[in-house]
Image (cartoon, rainbow, N blue to C red; front, top):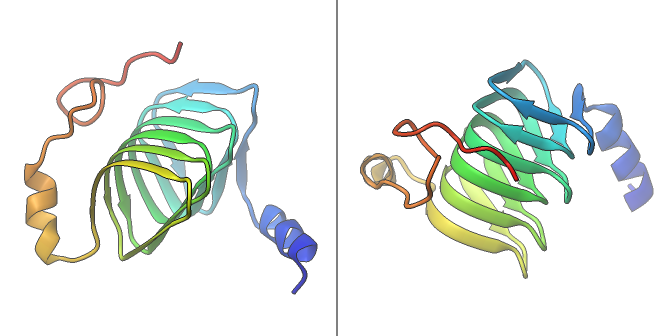
Length: 142
């Protein structure tokens, strides 16, 4: 399949899109897939693929089936499948997934586990980023 057709097909299967000019503060629950180009502060649950575009920003706790990060994210991510960090993205926090792909020039500052054995360690380690996790609410985007 040609790259242009691949991109068109993936956009057609996105059920929820948060646009560049959109800022959401609060909890989001999506049954299928979601693409974020705007800013979100809060907890997110996505039943399908969560894609954060290059202009996207998330600060909070995320549970999703699959994850693709192109933008900037802060938080705790629980992914039932694979996670993919694209070139130029910025990841700060913790991620638990079944597999991870980190492209060249992607920034990853945090903790990752891909096994059940690592789950205990993952749960015990507190991340040093203010406003993330259950101890304190996310701070506003400036």
